[in-house]
Length: 302
Image 1 (cartoon, rainbow, N blue to C red):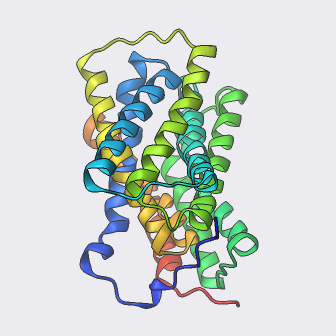
Image 2 (cartoon, rainbow, N blue to C red):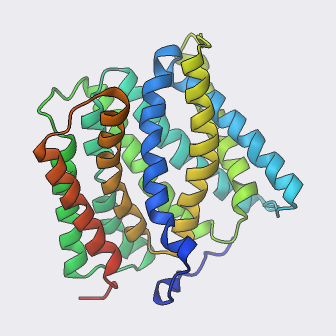
Image 3 (cartoon, rainbow, N blue to C red):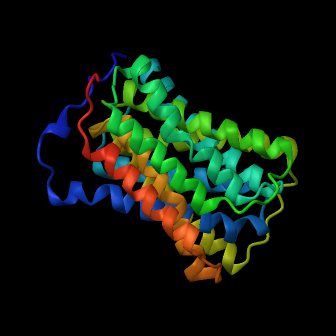
């Protein structure tokens, strides 16, 4: 499978629906942490994810069939599509869910996975030839400082295994983003997502049968959390993520993750009564400034 050419569409004015995609992505992606908070008390993490990925795969498959979407046909296309699903879905979500289930504070998990924009920017030049200028690097650093102010509460980092799992999750979504940009640009999102979700389901299913009891307490909260994560996150938000990767530089897309923890903090304040202090509000402002510097400035070789 030939690599997809780098997208140069940044140089064209965006229609309104494209302009709102980044904000919608951040808003919806942040709800995944709330869904996990609701659902994890009723099922082990890999069991929870296996059900989520299996249902999402079936729905994507049905949508692809009914809409006449093109399916990957060669072994290389299917393999590359499955690799993206394993990295972005099974590795990232599996690592985060397992770490939180083991006692890793959500703030620590957010700090570690929030390093994705920095890791992505560092790898963008050697892997894709994308360059950031000084202002964009400054934006990345400002955004990371803002992220720390939002989520750092001085709590214990939790078990070392949980921290390690979250670090693996960070590597998984970063490499998966590059892999999707490099090899997945020509695939139909509907059929490709079916394969990606199925591949991820297979991986976490093996982990569930190996390490978990697979008991599920089918409460109303669990059904709601599962439904939200399947329909809004797996079908909606991940599709937005792949569309953003396809049409823009991965460094700019990754910088949006700086905005996720602040939105999660607001969600938790609204839904669970968790407090917001001035430090966190200042961090949200810094994170927004950092993302603006990265996404509004045209990359150059300086």
